[in-house]
Image (tube, rainbow, N blue to C red; front, top):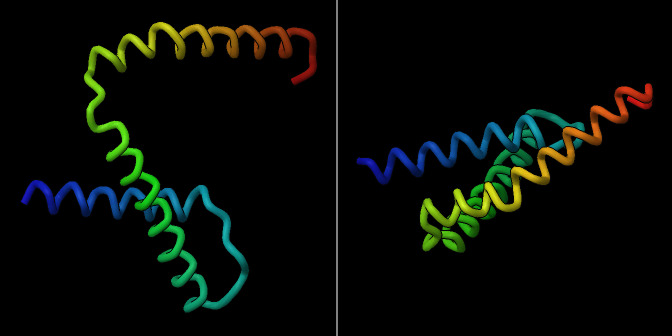
Length: 90
């Protein structure tokens, strides 16, 4: 039951991602539904590949990666945005 719940959660989440963030082409209801199924299948495939590729990463490795790389990059991005906003560019 837990495995089915995780699969359903991935499918519904992928459908939301496909509907909200992936654009579509104008068409009828049938064409729109077909596009949603194709886009959802693509997102499920990408998420499955990511899950399979990073299955052996431990929590301490993720935390270490976040502190070493993601935190400095996010602070640099915040600094760039503040500079641009202060100069009236944004």
